[in-house]
Length: 79
Image (tube, rainbow, N blue to C red; front, top):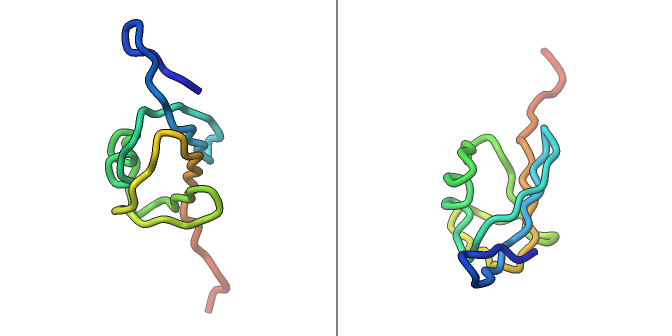
């Protein structure tokens, strides 16, 4: 997907968010931390996956990356 700033095209990364499921295009490059801030997401509550790789907050994301953001789910057997 290409965004436009005025008459000039700007490359955008595709971000797939879960819960609720939606897709957004975000201008890059950026870091995971900056992306989460832009989307107003708590870094402690999500996992960020770029391609097939789980990435950390300091990872750099390119404008042509496909990124998936999933909520952290915890639970387990009660004692």
